[in-house]
Image (tube, rainbow, N blue to C red):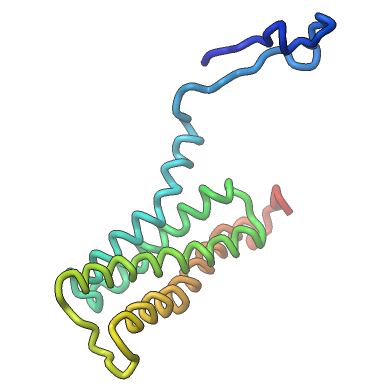
Length: 171
């Protein structure tokens, strides 16, 4: 860690050293380690789960892999919610989980739709309009009907200590 001291120009025109108020300024030059490093890695849980779930939905049989995909996305959303919320509990964690769940499943279906169209395939629900509207409806439906419940479960899991009777740090 590199330390920088206040320059004479910062000390003021009178030459008075404000060292009592600010002793030194530290600048962190390395990547975070320990808990901060793990937290920064957890942020990538939901985006990674979205990409993997989108690829798996296109290239593998989703009906057979429904439960593993739900768990994979669920743990990704939980990890990202935990990292972004800083371990805090409360309604913020619940709503953050729901928003991340929506974004993760919508992202997974966007990856699926892009791969599906790029490989020359078509969506089979012609009654819902042209291909582009089917893709948008697919993304929104998966975000709403899979993502919000997945994120809500992640939010409830972050509430678990409070529900079990342990006092919360953030109220």
